Image 1 (cartoon, helix red, strand yellow):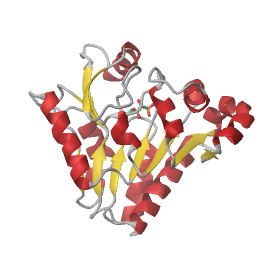
Image 2 (cartoon, protein in one colour):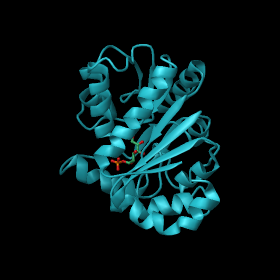
Image 3 (cartoon, rainbow, N blue to C red):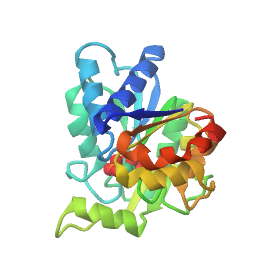
Length: 250
Ligand code: F6R
C-alpha cells in the first residue's frame, strides 16, 4: 500500500500511528527502528502518544537497524546517542537494543545481534528509511538479499553524505553493523518512509525497477505486507507511473 501525505511531518505522524496500532494490537511487539532525518517526526509523535497515555512501549522490544563501528555511545554522531535524544530519554523505560558501537569484535557483535532478534521472534513491524543509493539499514548496493546481521562496508556515496553531517576534522566511520536484508524481509509488516524530492528517483527505481541487489530497497517489491509512506514532494516523480501502481497492487 502506498500512502501520500501532505508533508514530511505527516509521514512521521502516519508512521507513529502504525507503531501505535501495532502496540495496541500486541503490546509486546518486536519493532525495528531506523535513525536519520526522516524518522525524527515519527519519534516526536511517539513521545507524545506515550505522554498522553495513548500507547505504552514498556512491553515492546525495540531493535535499531544499524550502528557505526568505532564510536562510543556518548558520541553525538552515534545512533545510540540519536535514540537517547529523540526517544529513549523522553519516555518510560523500554527494552531497547542496538549493536554495540565500541566493540572489539564487530563480527561477533553482529552474529549475537542476529541471535537476539531471532530469540525475540523476529520483527512484527520494521520501519525503514531509504538512502539515495537505495540502501535500507546499512545494506549498501551489492549486499546479497540472503544477508543476515553483518558488518557492512559503507558505500562511498554514503560516506560522502555522512561527512557533511560529521563536519570538518572528524573521521567518518566506513564500517557499521546492520541488520541484513533477509532479516528485514522476514518482518511481518514493513513500513518504508521516504520524504523530499531527493528520494524520488531512488524510490521510483526501487518500486518499479528491476529487483536487484544493486538497488537494495528493490527487494521490498517481494514483501507481502509493505506500506510506503511518502510526502507530496517525494511522490511527484513516482506518481507518474500510475499504471505501475496498478501492476504492483499499490
Ligand atoms: C539509519 C538507516 C538508514 C537511513 C537512510 C535514510 O538507521 O537505517 O538506512 O534510513 O540512510 O536516512 P535519512 O532519513 O537521513 O535520509
